[in-house]
Image 1: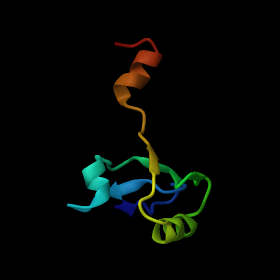
Image 2 (image 1 turned 45 degrees about the vertical axis):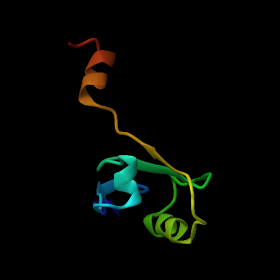
Image 3 (image 1 turned 30 degrees about the vertical axis):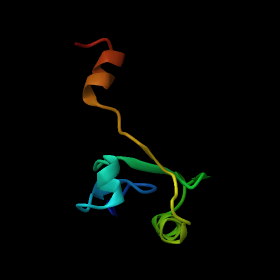
Length: 81
């Protein structure tokens, strides 16, 4: 699992998933945002802080992700088909 490092991206947004690793096994996809590590909310943390949390978390740990909204869902909200 690797973060996006583009300008304007805040927090930790997954850019790629390594094969045969826990994130792949859990079905994590590129574009998902990391929300919490072992109960500690981290959406406003910087990339370095989040990477430190991930490296130092006691295993097994619950990692919570947020999926990005889909285009179909956004179109439905606007009343489009």
